[in-house]
Length: 173
Image 1: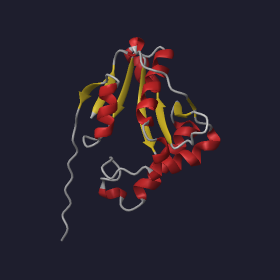
Image 2 (image 1 turned 45 degrees about the vertical axis):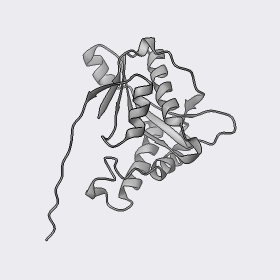
Image 3 (image 1 turned 135 degrees about the vertical axis):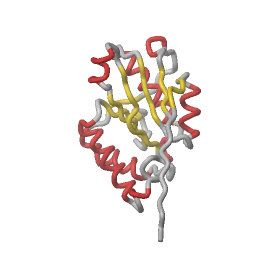
Image 4 (image 1 turned 90 degrees about the vertical axis):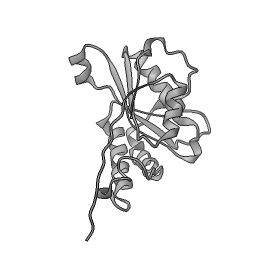
């Protein structure tokens, strides 16, 4: 499922304390990603990522996001709250240039038990960040089984932009 927010400049939601993850936090962010397993995400549901391969891939991907693969990685910045969630953002600069408008895309996000409820806050602050950067759109994709993300999108006035399905069949003899 692809969701988009096209009223970024008029976005009026409460603010939350977030900060950019630091490069020295890359391994910790990777561990958060690996621990927040979703059996139905695009990696764990794929037979190619059997066993812990999906966890290892997501850990490396999240670490790389902090190390510069993504344009920003937001984490909570509340006093006395451990960092147990993150949201990685790509500003899609090449696409923005060709379309003549600004985009931000939620690339990867994970929320551990110590940060329950932070998905909405991180997504909200992603829209705030896009507004501050002059972007007109925020994009986010998720699996058709991820109702928690649907609720976040509904609460923050995202719209459904499209849906696609990948079907796979394996024959075992």
